[in-house]
Image (tube, rainbow, N blue to C red; front, side):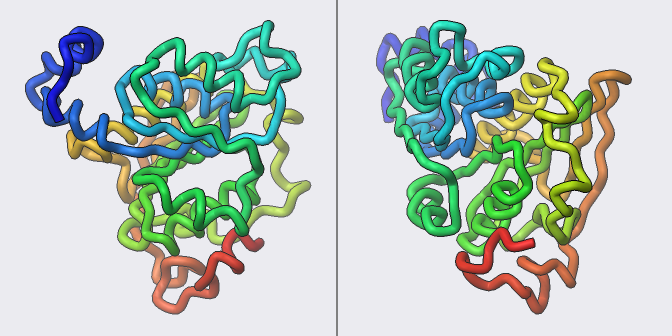
Length: 262
């Protein structure tokens, strides 16, 4: 595709990067990305992907904006209290970049909707705050051979990894089984240091752009851990587990109907 004069001004800092240039910007414009969640992680991911010029940007959420969200969910404002998050997100993103297509999915991500939703997008982003949705996303992307950019936050800690479904280590290669509900505190109970959401969300946005454009080395077979309290990053090298319940040699999970199970 050819860039308009306005596009050249808008994306001039991308075009100035030799490894990026017009080709990278064109790949972004031709890409489609689905972000599941428009909260703490989804906010920075969506803002940076919209700003970067992703051609079709979808987002899934069935919640409304609450006052306690605003400490970290920078996509929304005080004026949005009580609004559907997908509507608030759409208004903010359109104001930032009216030249991209925004697709709002006002629903809860589920096994029943997974294939329809994921099938329409090139790259999927995990921006959820609960284990059932996280495991379901992982399993569905492995089964559908989709690329998933995973992120998680709690208190001062953030995690990120990128999964090429069926080819690289997946979330269950690291965490084979969903933990019992009572064994891990939720972000609402344990708290989230606001800037951690921004940091990990920005890392996820970086990963999406790298996957789409082919620039750099995504976090395939690598788990990145960020500790804001100590201001450290640690990397763990991963490999596909032969006994992984979804991507192993004899998987126990072989269909979307079974995906996301404990």
